[in-house]
Length: 246
Image: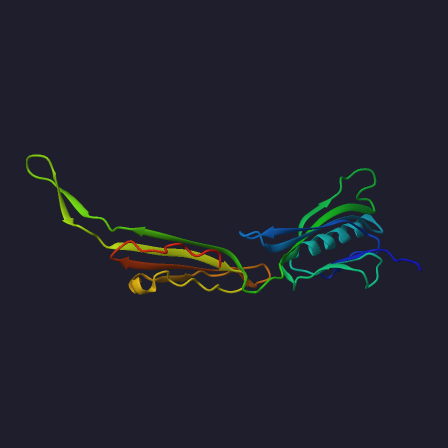
């Protein structure tokens, strides 16, 4: 069976058969705070030789190629034998960002360059979401602060003589705050319950939701919520450990 020449398509632009050589396809991952895979970044590098029938024809083809690669969020397909089978591909519908051209360069103008042919090299990147639970939490933190409980003293100044210290009360109110934040990949995550519900001062409760980030393909990702609870006690409370990762 005779094999055809490789064909690469970038959006609506299709290279001539055999015009492009795919140099490499690299896949790397970004990780969230707990070490889970968050995103996959795919990078294609390829090079080739653009050929024209004349210098004028070549100039026209160069302009069309540069215009094509200035566009973002396009499908990229490489068919090693020019057929519809065994193709490498990146699609805009599946991407968080891109695919897009991150680097485009023409070769050095030496010898016969820019007569009837022009060498080029291109890098195309796409960012894809890791296929995980849609409610996956990408980061979580919480802290608990407890203060008060001792005697309240005050120094008083006089017209003459040294200041004197007076004890205003033997015991003060013990207060505690429970604050934290969490980010969900596709939706706002659930927040922890207050550690001491019976002692919560509801006038101090605060829940804040931040706007999600918007990706290049106009989808919303990374929903962050933060919380703060306030508590009052007669004595120093027990079981004041913050929640661990949700």
